[in-house]
Length: 80
Image (cartoon, rainbow, N blue to C red; front, side):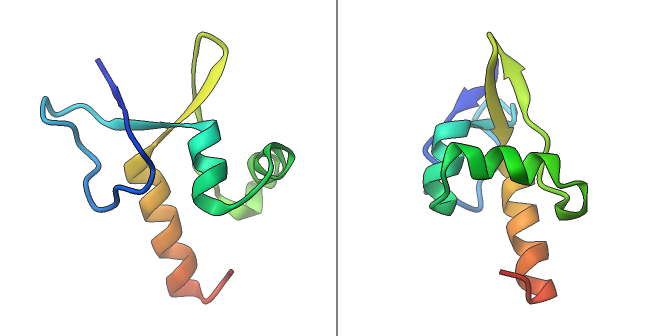
């Protein structure tokens, strides 16, 4: 079973049992300091390549490892 974690924990994308750690949409919004509508816009913008969510009981969750990789790719590219 996947684990939901605090988005402030970076560098560790796997749980103790080897599962991918998941972050709720609310935690993603907090992590990037954005509103829920902004997250929707990021998801709609294919050119931004923001990680796709998983849906569990109609709620969005994101893989922490994909968020970290996306952040790193944006930093390397000089994009904000």
